[in-house]
Length: 285
Image (cartoon, rainbow, N blue to C red; front, side, top):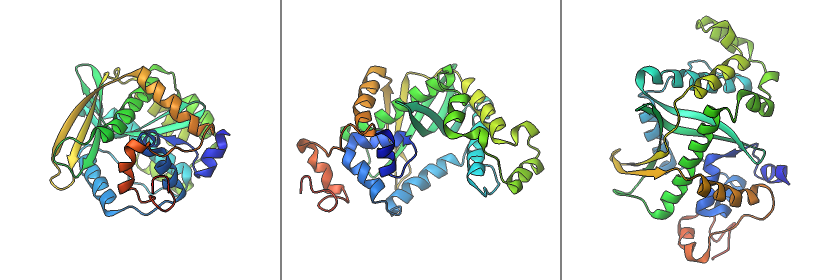
């Protein structure tokens, strides 16, 4: 049953954003995988804002991957260098985190980590058309997301989820980089022990594990798409019990125990902005 849902959606793992999407409408989340579409102008505008913020502190690897292991290497290297830079910059962006839930692969990308008063603080940025705080229904999705990031980062720092866990699932130890990509790494002067997947991922996991403990106070920051100004800044307290209850309910779907559920009748107003309404989904039409 576990593999069936992922196969149906043509996925190999669950992302943090999948869980937050389930909080809005589980049926819509499923249909978005079954009927994918090219990014809209609105989505591209949101991505552009993220990139503008990211470019201020992000450190990319200027090598072109040739195959999947090269892509994985690039991801790990940028994570490693990014997090290492926090000791001098006190901040980093677009940090990839990994974990597992009920035997499933789980991954996500934290918008921002910041060191302050001996703690690691998580900030999640969201773009909006509004000039003030978004609706409670919207905030609910992002609360789940940022709490799950905190839970995953806690697991990486404490050693509850390690390189060995990751490698066993992703098969890192069985992969090799393309010759041209590895030669490029050597030409850049990267240490020999870090010019292979095992070396860079072990180093990256060690780097994350050395981060200070994560604050229980999490931040949601909403940025207006037009003005690029922060229009709302919301502090969220970490609630492990509430998060676990949410995951327990959501995992019933991923475990194949039930079908994807549409919104309840009292929330059918959400259907007005859904591209599947009246077409692939006729629940409230």
